[in-house]
Length: 263
Image 1 (spheres, helix red, strand yellow):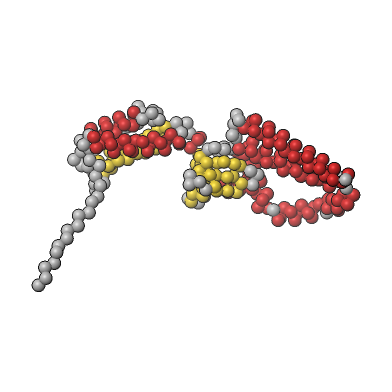
Image 2 (cartoon, rainbow, N blue to C red):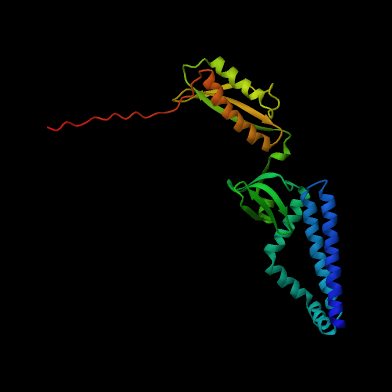
């Protein structure tokens, strides 16, 4: 019974300390979602578990002798463990580097590029001592090792104060260009989410087989606003051009059918 009481006591202390760390993290994270806080929480949780297990082992003669024997051959064990877990250690070290430099935080949208290939794109939901969890726009979660996150190119639009996105639309060669430019500029300026409209201009960016391409930049405060504003403006441009008899050309195919006459 005394044996069970000791085990229960140490487990209880370990759980209590872990809950205390989690409580402190929740209080601090209400002010900031910095990734180093989550990383530190994971480190403290692991350290508490290791200390509790080691202290519990020292309470009993059988396990104490085993732990002493293991400690006496500690150098060999460390060498073997380091070799066996070198990838895991690389992730931990990279996690420390990422949490210190903070190229992204929780609840930020990022794109992870390596060798020109997009590995993951979406919202950062969690950062542990081993990996970073990115929830993609289709609902899937990418669990990316920290060693990859440390070496990859991270595109984080949250680092910029405002977000700009291009919008292009083609009008026919017979269009009154000044009128089309005025309608497009007015629609962009009137949207509630666009900012710095006085700096944006509508230009003719090129020729196509169908007509002239009008182009402008939509500026918003963040990426979420950019998605919505650009979508709304594209819809409004179709409706606005239709109301002002401005043609948006598109390719059509005409099929001529000839009925064969029997000889």
